[in-house]
Image (tube, rainbow, N blue to C red; front, top):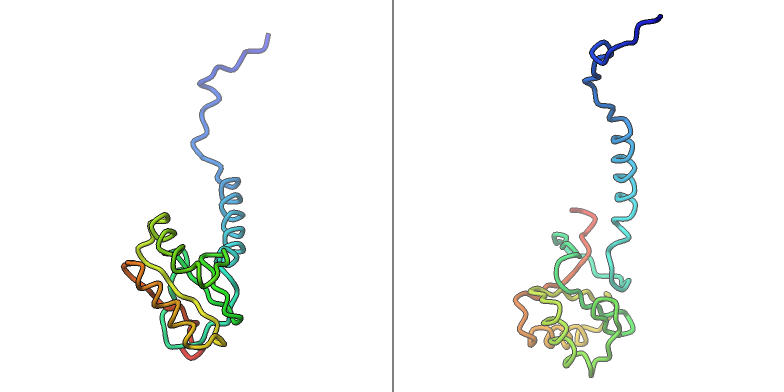
Length: 137
């Protein structure tokens, strides 16, 4: 009769196979690298170029003025008449301490100053202007 192997004869494997874990981590890394640039929300505008440092778009609330002069809070369009009333309420609702103005370079300066003035009147801690970095930097 053949002898049965006892548990102590088999021993324990002291190595952990991490190949599957590495495969999953690398796949997730590739997915995040591809989707991260798409996560920048807002309305597409051609912002002017300036010597500036980039601002993380995830911080604060972004107000956009496109080349037609249409105002957007985040991605929601708002008429100029409604902006002065809606903007302070949205800032309080979202708890945004800083807001950013992103205007197309074709927008008249007077329109940008009007929107900026209404934003400053809303008692936000910081109002910033978003510009694209110059190629020379």
